[in-house]
Each structure stands twice: as C-alpha cells, then as structure tokens.
Length: 355
Image 1 (cartoon, rainbow, N blue to C red):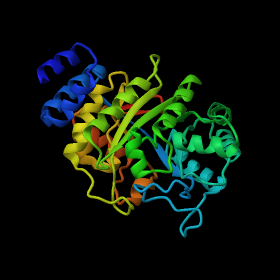
Image 2: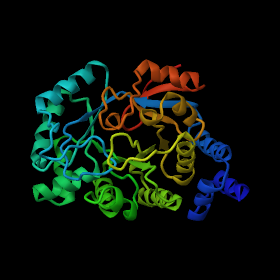
Image 3: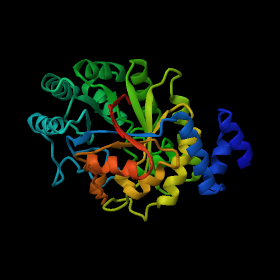
C-alpha cells in the first residue's frame, strides 16, 4: 500500500480517503513523514522556512458559544470577562508596529452586543494610523455571529468589513469539520457548512484565508480524514487558502478535559495534511502548542512555515501552553534545523532572508 501511495504522490496524483486513512492508522510514522518531506522539498526547493512578525490581539473573551474545549471564554455575566477599548487595541498595534510587525491577528469571543459597526470603526482607525499593518481578523464563527446580530447577509457583512480595512480571514473555529464532533464539543457554535459558507464567500470576494484543524477530542481517525478532504475540496482552483495549520487540543482548564494527544499523533496528522492537501502550498508547524523541539522536527514532516512570532497570545495560553519565542529565537530555531529563515508577510511574500 505504501509503495502504491508513494508512486501516486511522486507523480503528483491525488490520494483518496481510504489511502489517507491507511496512512493515518496503519503506516509507520517515519515513512509517512519521509513522504511528506519529499512533497515539501518539491514545493519549496529553496530550503527556506518562513515566519511572520505578528500579534494576536484577543479583543474580548466574552462569548455566548460556551465551547467545552475552550479555557479562554467567559459567559456574558461571568466574572473575568473583558472587552478591550479601541484605544487599548490601537496601543497594542502601535507596539507591534514599533517592533516591525506586519500582521495583526484579531479574534475574540462571540460577544452578544458587538455589531459590525464596532469593527468597521476599529478597522478604519487602524488603517488610518497604521496603513501598512495587515488586518488578518475574525474567524468564520465570528463572521456568522456578526452578520446575524447586525441583520446582514454573510456577503454584505464581509464586504463592509473589507471596505473598512479587513485584509484576510483566519481559519479559526474549524476545529473538526464534522458535525458529530462539533455537536459534542461546541453545540452552540456554527456547523461545518456555515464555516464553508463564510470561506466560499470570502474567496468569491477575492479574500485570502487560512484553514485550520484542531484534533485530540477523542474523534475517530476517519473524521480527521473527512476534515482534510473537505478543506481540499473547498480550495478554489485559483487559490484561496494560503496555508493550513493543524494543532492539538490543549485540555488544561477546559470543561472537556482529557489527556490530549502527544507529539507522535501531531506529527502523523501534520505529515498526512501535507499529503492530502495537494492544493495548499504552505503548511504551518504549531510551536505555540508543541514547543520549539517538535516544531523543528515538523520541518522534516511536511511543514515549511512556523507561523507568527506571536507578540501576544491568550487563547492557547489559557489552556496551559506557555511557549514564547522571539523573532531571533525563531530565526535560530530554523537555522539549527538546517534551513534558511525568512520573514514574510501575510500573503507569503518574502520580506527579508536570514542566511
């Protein structure tokens, strides 16, 4: 089976669901990783590993979804809830700008009172004060929520946000694009078809997006394969998803709990992602959840990007992940792994190389 799959992959042919499931469940980790590494080298022959200088500003932790896997949210009347003012957010953007950052990642809970106008005003202020800062913001779940609370269609909501300064959409809130899992871990959140709806509309409007996968919820391996195939089928011929980012559920401090999954499972799913998603060029390793050593290893299991420097990150940190890396530490990490580091922008254009 492995030989047949390798021949297909080397010939640029697409693997099917049963082959993907066999790779995930039956195949040897190192053999799957080696095959994924061959694909990475073909797509990225320059031996370059990229990263972006960014900050993840979580504008609010107040959320009506109440997902069992989330340690970050607070219910609307719960102690500890917050909403950052526009001025506070602008101060955070100013700090990012002073450090040479190019990407603002802005995400939060499904706030019961914020309408699209709150974000339009914020985005316009950011554009006015920091015209070079790229706004990569609002997950599909937030877009659906905003559209509903503002009395807008998804298309009109996205168009208004784009006109105000929104540049691209992150793929957060995907978790697993299988409703049987979603009903168990986040019954009040959007279903997978709604996630698909937002991404299709964003791509139709010419917006770039990313796609994600969170696993380790006790799902069946076939459900992971289903998620990957759905993302593959959703990618437009002309491109839409600039990158795919898988990471593992962090169970600490969550209602769902559990023991999570380890590095072996993470690397297997990462490598499988590279093999299944033949129409998404960039694959990010998650040092935020896996730490620097596994992130380095991931560069030999299909990953070609280490995401952002994450000047700030609160959601994963709330679940006990404490990894923090500076720009120089990322550069050193890449170099020590045998690659050339390069700073990029959100669209994966190279801004600076570090030989």
